[in-house]
Amino acid sequence: MNKLKIYIFAFLYLGIMSGCSFFEAEIPEPAFLDLKSPTLTNNLGQKETHNITDVWVFQDGQILGIFPLPSKVPYTASTASTTIKIVPGIRSNGMQDRAALYAFYEGVETTVSYNPGKTIEIPLNFGFKSNIKIPINESFEFENSFSIDLDLNTNSKLSIDETTSSLGNKSAVMNMTSTTSFAEVASTRAILPSEISGGTSYFEFDYKGEGEIAVGVIKSRNGIFSTEYILFVPGKPNWNRIYVDITDKVQDKNFDSYRISLAFRKPDFALQSRLYIDNIKHFHF
Ligand SMILES: [Ca+2]
Ligand SMILES: [Ca+2]
Picture 1 (cartoon, helix red, strand yellow):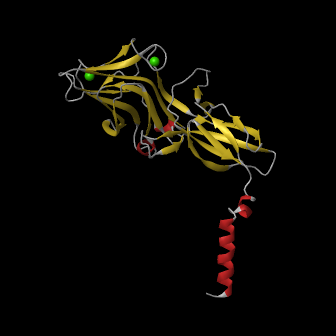
Picture 2: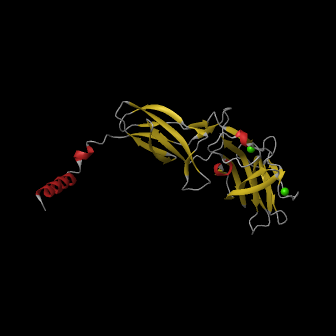
Picture 3: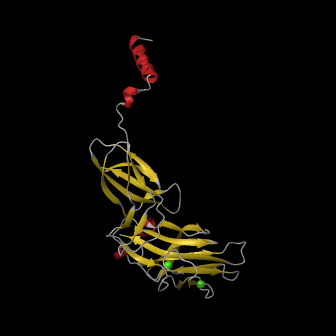
């Protein structure tokens, strides 16, 4: 071992024995952002249901990280104040490992002072971006815009329900029995390629009940219809919101128009089951 190496080892050893105080002196004490449950309000000022699970936190344009809610986020600054931007995040297609910054929700931005050791609460009141399109927006309060019957069985249809809802007073229910164990509906609204500027496209809704809901896109091209299912969503006992990424299915615009299709399937073991849906929204730019 030569002399230089011995010096380096001695230096590191002293550093460890002294608790690395010469390193610690370089690290400023953090302050904290206290982030609690978020709210989501639409452009008419009405509360919306959401499933914002985490936030993407930026400080002066640099990402601090992705944090599950609620969280206490540490930050330091070399100036007396710093700009914090908080962007809502969701789990795309309901998958825990697919954290996505949600392009349709507006984040919050604020300037906070940097007081080491102190905690500042930032209320997370999110909204919708102003430049988004919402071609389908259905809470089943006044009508049912998923009334096209694709399965051709008149006994199965989505009907309005007033016993439960995630938003407002009503939802839609698919009642399934041994003779109606599968049902398929589509949106009355058809979306044209000319309506789409490009970029991300999502379909989201609240659901609960027993069975499975499949979400698909039904495209019309030269008078021929084709349906492609994207995601199969198992029912849950309590209301849950899911975000379905349909960007890949619609961005190439290889259709004259498309609708959203929903298929419902009864669990094999059940004689009868119900699946409820509410607050359906389809977003694109
Ligand atoms: Ca409703
Ligand atoms: Ca039917």
